[in-house]
Length: 365
Image 1 (cartoon, rainbow, N blue to C red):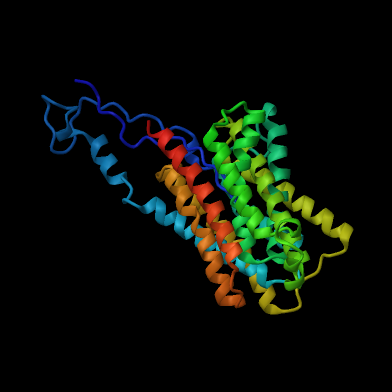
Image 2: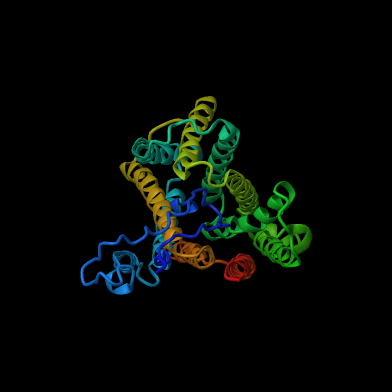
């Protein structure tokens, strides 16, 4: 009699999410379920040791089956924690974005080092993959710094929405460097994203000079939008590098490179700029601690979600980041988004959701 199929094996997911430079343990395929030995389990019989009545493998699979919707709940919780962290970044205005990034790297390092020691992956990585790990660390850390800087320059909702253009740039960069197919659907999603960004930025040569006259902080708004767009490009390049690395490197090691090179870069730049200083207000110090804790918690819940749920539904639920950003902007900053921002947000969200649904449909075929 043939052994049971493994119902609990994890499938590798390929996610295209923005401000998420982390890979999950599910990128490695779990070993198949062990064959049932001749000794029957509880309730089994000697005549059919591999049948469902005596299979321990089936009982263990039933115990390990995740609760329906648990992965989406983890994604929602991750979006909430990361959005709250972004809110704290916006609240801390007298601390440079690079210093905030340094504090977050320190908190991540305190968690990653024990994980590396426990998993025995080493701190350097395979010889042939070190250059890609180095690029992943540098690009990922710069993407984080740019996102925090965008939060300080422009509104929370605008920066969050523009950062969601990352999947579009991922498709373009992957087509160039990894020779992945760029379909007409990808071109359509790109057009939607560009339209959304234009509606949010509202350049004067398209919307007239009265836009600049009515908005006193328009220069900061444009600068913040461009910085958020640069974050999306760097985050897309990071995702392409992670695709290139594949399963040859443990995901913990890729996070380690991101943390260590991010911290080194932040310290050097802060020393050159002379911006390193502790906040005078005790509340700002608390915000810095919470930014690090919520950032790590958001990444951990996102990684857990991708372990037990497909990438398509996770990407769709991840768009709740934008909803939380709008809510926080209205409640805590009394800043009502304009209709241009709402329209641009819908375009970007439609593009991101469409790309996620298309990839989801392709994976189920």
